[in-house]
Image (cartoon, rainbow, N blue to C red; front, side, top):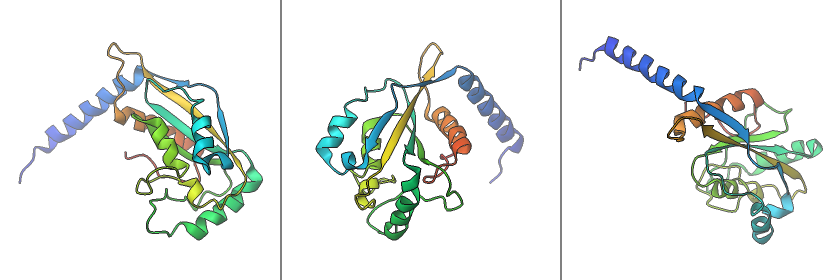
Length: 187
């Protein structure tokens, strides 16, 4: 098979140029207030439903940050994860073992159903989706987490934000915050 390598490189440059133009028309704005959850709220589906109802449905893609508020509980939470994470029936987010002194648990994004994504992280949905699944392994440890939300808004005429743009922004936040769990975006 023969490919035109110069054409491939030219097309790659054009793609990067298109992405740069699209990123130039993006605003990243805080979405609502910071929401605080106690672990008891996601160990009880009814309490969780009441708490998650505080978050209005976003109209744009969301980048979210999950942070543990009680730094004294962080090491205990990590030990609980280490004991449980080999459960083959649950698709856990990867633990970043080279990062230990950080209160940021996870950085992620959602372009579709944000509430479903958070339910996965809290362990209230499908164990086959890669997520934190906190309530499945936290052994009912009492701790608080905060949820920080940012809307990714396009200032362009069509207002649409493509998934690769959201992933680039998520990746920059991930690189800045170095969360304890998760992986870099799919870039």
